[in-house]
Image (tube, rainbow, N blue to C red; front, side, top):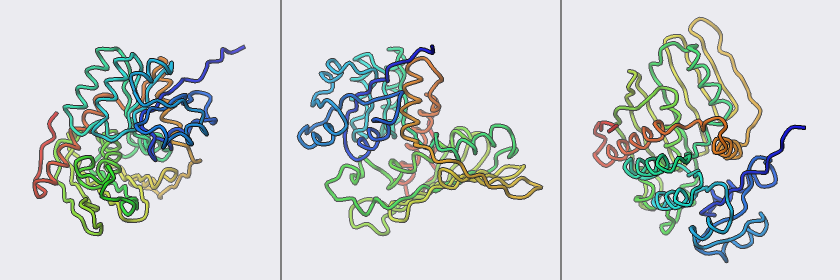
Length: 332
C-alpha cells in the first residue's frame, strides 16, 4: 500500500482578512496542509474564527512556535512586520511562507534570505498568481519559444478595495503601502513580468490620488525596461472593478492571460486561439506547494533571485513615484 503522510501543520501569524482567506483555502479541503494554530495581537477578537477552524490561539509568536509543534510558519501581518516574524520563525527552525510583498526594502528582503540560507530552511513568498492556470499556460508559451523573442510585456491588476480603506487602517498607510496599489496588487505583476521576461533594470512611475479622500494614491502606472531588451508597462488601480491581464508580445506572436482561466494566443501567421481552464484555488495551491518544497519535493516556483529582483524593482518603482516619474535604475 502507498505510504500516507500526515498533513503539514501550519501556524499562521496574522488573522486579518487575508490571513483568514489562507486558512479557509485549506482547512478541511487539503490532505497536504492543515492550520493548527494562529498567533494574533488580540486573541479575543479572533476567537470565534479560530474555534470554527480548529485553531489554537497564541499572542506570542516565539511561544506559539515552541508549543504548537508546527511544521511551518505562514506570515500574514502588516508589511513592516514581516522581517521580525520571518526571522522568529527561522530561529525556531521552521520553514517560512510569507505573504507578498516579502518586505518594504531590498535590504530587508536580503537579510531574510541570508538568515534562511544560514539556517538551511526554505523561505517562500506568496505570489498566488503563479498558480493561476492561464498564467501557467502563458509561461509555457514564452518558455517553449512560441512567441519568439520577447519585445514587450504589459499588465493591469486592479480592484475596488480602496473604497473600503479608512485612515486608521494599516493598508491605507503610505508607509506600509507606497505608490498606491503597488504592494497589494502591482507586486504580482512585477513578479509575473520577471518570471516571463527576466530582470527589470529601470522604472519610471506616475502615481496619484484621483478618487480617494484618504492620503493614498489610487492610480499608478510604471514604464519598465528589462535586461533582455524588452520594454513593458504596469498599471494598478484600487478604485475600479476587479481586473487582471498580462500580455506578452514577441517576434512570433502574442499571448494574453485574461483573468485566471482564459488564455489567448495569436501566432504571427495564424488565427487567434482561446483556451479556457478549469478554476483552481490558487491560495490552496501555493500553500500545498510550500509544504511539498519544505518536505524536500519540487522547489517552490518563486526563486530567491526572482524574489530579490522583484523587491529591487519595487524599490525603483516607488522611488520613481516619489521623484516625479524620473527613470530610476534597479539596483541589483
